[in-house]
Amino acid sequence: LAGNIILVVNQDETIGLINREGVQILGYRDEREILGKNWFDHFIPSAERPSVRKVFYGLTHRKSAQVEHYENYIVDRHGQRLLIKWFNRLLLDDAGNPIGTISAGVDITKQRDAENKLSQYTEDLENRVAERTKELADIAKQLREALKKEQELGELKSRFVAMASHEFRTPLSSILSSAELIEQY
Image (cartoon, rainbow, N blue to C red):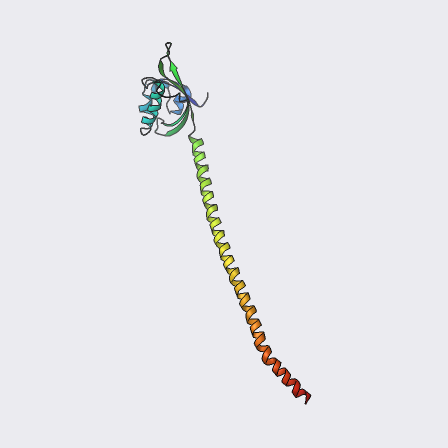
């Protein structure tokens, strides 16, 4: 499996086997630099050691169900954190007693970073859409209020014109009547 770590961790937490790709992923040149080291003390970030050890202990002491798939960070030789997705199997001796685990791991750091960036981008986009929707709702509210005021002004204008027309018509009628009378004589 090119690009994957194949790793055997013995019951005493030491590394019993690692493939060439695993050596390279961890930043080493030769497996002899890694074999025999305590996996947890050298390659698991200190903050995660208790939880990863608990899973390993539960598996190797049959205290928990088989943990086939597991994700955790490891630290390479240069201190870079890599997120690894593991597929684990319990190793048994001829008598059926646990002697360690064999694990195949895939570096999913870049994939997870891309997923996180996509998730952040989606969240930012959703926030922008929500802001713009609110802005548009505010504008629509302002337009409704302006339309209502325009309708009110239209009604006032109609009433004014009706009133003014009535007020002008009454004196004009009498003036016209008077003018007609004057014209007849």
